[in-house]
Length: 481
Ligand code: UGA
Image (cartoon, rainbow, N blue to C red; front, side, top):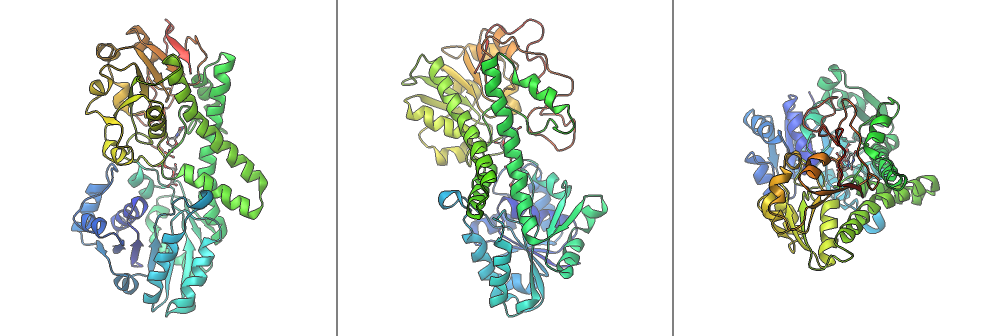
């Protein structure tokens, strides 16, 4: 079995290292951040990811997973070096490849014998070939060093499951030797039936950004439909359900609302647009410009709606915000649509009181000016308006009658379109839901409808949309966004 190293133990790298060790590989992982390495070596995961910490501990105990800060150790140890460093957004939306090249440059002098560098980071097409040329120029092993690209498709919140049972494995290679090594690394999932696709380097790099661009397009598409539903007196929720029953369209990633955020989709859309622009491919540039603009427009829409419900100005208004993570089951607030809305409400003079089950510490670092409340009732105390911005399941379990007792005004904007509107209106609330026409009586959801992304497995519990969006009675107080 090839010996494996993992360079960079952020979200992607730590999950990859742990999961490869769990598949039975000997894994040595490195990072330049001493604190991260110390924590990981001690069995602590420095971010919120269900299921990862026990698996880290198990594989530390087995001795298959170890950590180091020495590139010399990594160079000596590995047959396959997985490059898992970050590619943050740089100038004009382009991907900043500083960490990729720094890692390749740090590793190259320690590559004395034949080995493979397999990139997993999301990069602009053409990067792998640059890495190949750069490493071969300085590594003692020269042409015996190979480079492959093996993009990662895991989702935060489902990282372990997505790594151990991915939908597919893509191997961008330039040699049979590289392919053979990677086939050995992924022998277990391949034997379990995970499709393994072998391509050239450029196609593999593009598969990843194309996948994220498609997901973002799907979300912006349904949000554009939400806008037309509001104007036309229709309801986007049953519309999405009905579209989703067409197997060619599919229901997943058709949840309307506040749009996409996080450390991947927004930056990858912009980086892909920058690549397309550099290559002169106008069709991709205009498509992705529209996708991004629709997405940003959702944030504007919620701020405008909040202003409207407050009678034209947010100055001095007390606004309670439910959820600041970019999506549920995550403590990540990178490009969080919710946090962006909070900042804009505060900039317009609102007093914003925030609650989130796990993301408040990371949010407080980015937006220290907001009030962080330890519970939903504490956040809503005296509120003129409640905003539901991240669809944690906890918020679907709120008792609207109990919450009604602590607020100043019973007005809620459900920017994720997944609260049980009838329940809230019955308790005297005025509910504004994006994507429903003003005065819409709501529509009973179809059997088997899903909410936002949950498990990749069909019918996953815990994310299904709450039943009874309206029932037969019709939520009198429900209005479009
Ligand atoms: C995304 C992709 O889904 C992964 O396949 C990919 O590997 C990852 O980026 C990456 O490039 O590293 P992630 O950022 O974890 O994963 O989040 P998603 O589950 O894709 O959600 C992204 C955003 O879209 C969230 O803000 C979510 O609330 C929003 N969303 C998702 C919607 O607004 N509607 C939907 O129907 C689905």
